Length: 384
Ligand code: SF4
Ligand code: SF4
Image 1: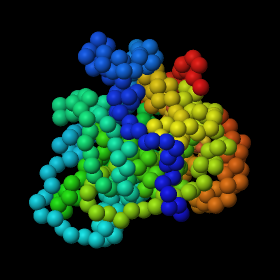
Image 2 (image 1 turned 180 degrees about the horizontal axis):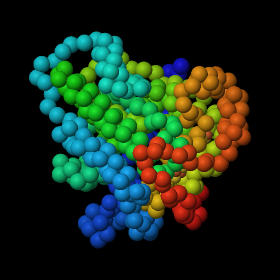
Image 3 (image 1 turned 30 degrees about the horizontal axis):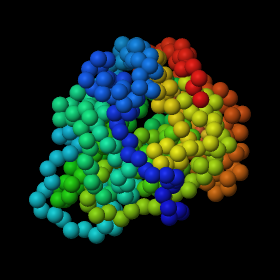
Image 4 (image 1 turned 60 degrees about the horizontal axis):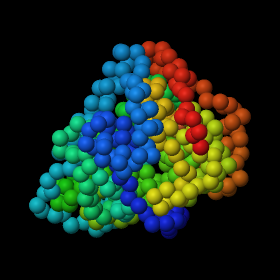
């Protein structure tokens, strides 16, 4: 158990502007005032973003299955409206000790279907500075400053079925991810509503409406560690999970950061970097990114895969040795890797030997047989 945050701070922490997010950049209309203002500040991204914007971006797959996916996206967008993630606070406050409040919050989140729940401080460095993605919600103005001063952050994870992640970049995998996002949206908006009914401010942060960076917040709360692929690794589910955060001023007892051995494991393993079709994942050492030491990821290279193939990729998560069904063997292997660093080295060698290159597994039969669309992907030149 660590006492210091596992996000290693190596400089001044800089808040991230959501307008810099590659998906937010992709929605900018060439010639519009927002476009001109943004690329006047970031001329270094304009050519590459234009290249990505020209790609279709349309969801690829059989029309019958695209409709599965659209239903699920609709649910997340609906839950992400500003009046759903936030709302009025009850005038009467219930008084609870921080320990009892945390116990109730965690219990309620699990009752709603959460697999992992941790509570930590809301580090202001992990709050976005400005809104970049509006999802056509008139209550959210592009470029509006974000003023979120809550003290505490509840991190909630729901696991993605590892069998479906292994289908590769096809609609059965994407629909499973969106199913999980729907569940998270339900859990966090319900939990935030409950906290407001206790007389304290609370806001849910979900896929279509984040004001915070969920991954570093969950790491500070002790849910896992950052992996080379830029996602959080957990002992329980590897990276085969999705996150939501509820921020609040309800006084809560905090969990501590953890050392599960992922840092040492990722230094040697590099399987995700080898298998990433866009070369978005670094083979090198960690560097300072916004003041935190981490393996740098090229968001634009990763996003180009989805825009070119019409599908999110997820190969880094599917091929990670930590992404395995929760069998007794896998639980033992990850527990061993956390305690004995050399065991991690053997775990990654065994993964390469047994599974070789990433081979997509067939999805459920309710989906039509997919085309291997991701094979047509061509990386940017000179990536890493
Ligand atoms: S999702 Fe795919 S393209 Fe993006 S980093 Fe992972 S492996 Fe690379
Ligand atoms: S594949 Fe290997 S290097 Fe990449 S995140 Fe997983 S353990 Fe780390």
